[in-house]
Length: 253
Image (tube, rainbow, N blue to C red; front, side, top):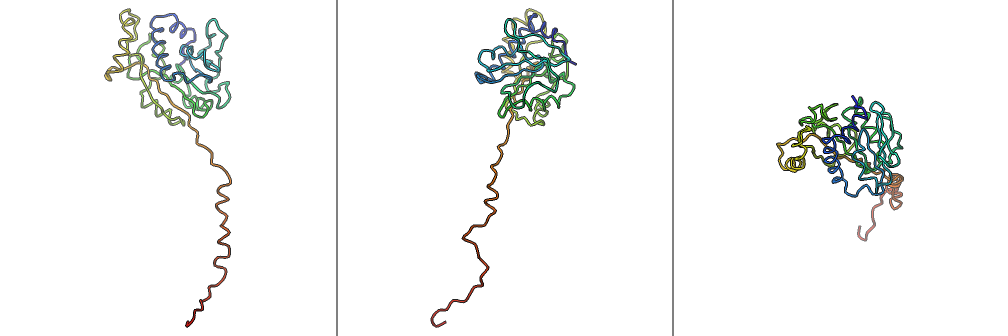
């Protein structure tokens, strides 16, 4: 079940908890791709636009895809719109043209996750990178209706990586974020950065959101013609076995 675009907008841009979540996830994404999006095509699907602003200045093109059941909003504010309403598994993007792809609030709410992953694989170019951002099955955020991560299907790291690999992607790395509780109380909001640092060093603290980075690796096509050349016998062996051997005539033989 998709949330409405206006509800997502209200959470990320008008609530303190949403702005905290946006900052932590965006900072983690930027740390994964430090400067690597310069001159490239960056696409977000679902409701990923809160994470894409750092790429507007240097990327060749930035596109925010929003599925029809969710609805669309103009983005970014005060600049030419780059958001597009699209079908869940039929994106208006040519095959193999995307360098960087981000899915947030898209995979866990999609009605056909395998088809969505196939579409993500289609639009990525060789060597392209994608980051899947989903609610952590073991975290508090997937159990709370206070945030968009409380809707849809949550995943464990193993479940998500297995699903992604089954569609041809190569797993590069994974990380977790949003260690603070999903509450609007002022104490937890103010201490959010402390919980993020603490969570990275203490495995027993479970983060609310999983981020799995994968790449599209395409095998090189072997050059044609080499096999035919090898099949042709060497000329120096022509006639070998055609003439019968004759005994040598040696003196005294």
